[in-house]
Length: 73
Image (cartoon, rainbow, N blue to C red; front, side, top):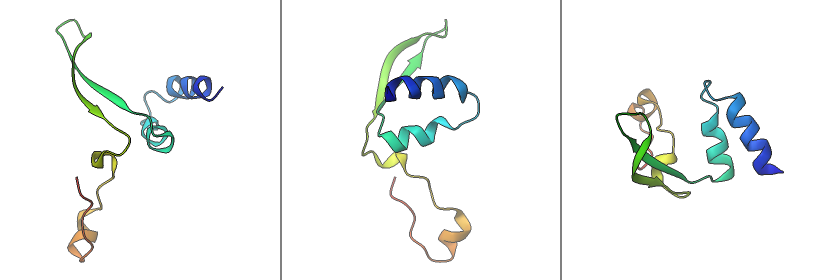
């Protein structure tokens, strides 16, 4: 049931950028692919795992300049 709701939500919010919050909330792992000339995925280049540090949002520059340490990436 959850997978069905996530699929509907993905289609509904495809062009709004809200999908990232579902990816973080449910720990969805994402294969990253390179597209060929026809626009189809051809090669899997990377995999964004559940505990990957690239998932963290970076702290804004003005906050980092005030002395807060940046997120590791």
